[in-house]
Image 1 (cartoon, one colour):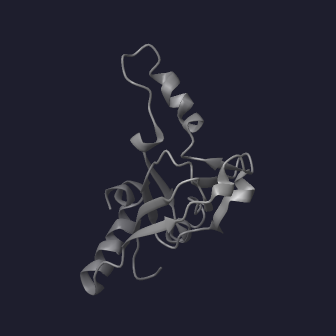
Image 2 (cartoon, rainbow, N blue to C red; image 1 turned 45 degrees about the horizontal axis):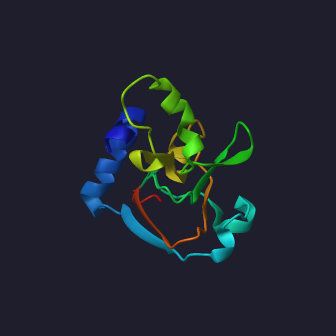
Length: 152
């Protein structure tokens, strides 16, 4: 809710009012994507386990993973970007070059993206993020938290 407060205090107040009246409809989900031996060496298009979609809530939060199973659609390049691929974090590692820190891994990050409720509230200024899940060579268990209200 703190992040929502930073985006728009009125949105956070709206969420708090709905929760006070009707309870918190936010969800914490676990998704199991079974291993696919065909995933090794396959393209992202061949590995799609859950097709492109947008989540209905305000935000979705997911810890990064080394599995490489989450892609978001980058509107500026009109391409899918794997936010669990080590190369996605290269620019962050470059910022810490010369430090004694160990290289950053996808699991060191939390991935947060906007949902449809935030897009509606902001009148499109903050668009919901299309994303999809990919199958991997090993079972993939993905935990997410989605901040929702009763308008979702």
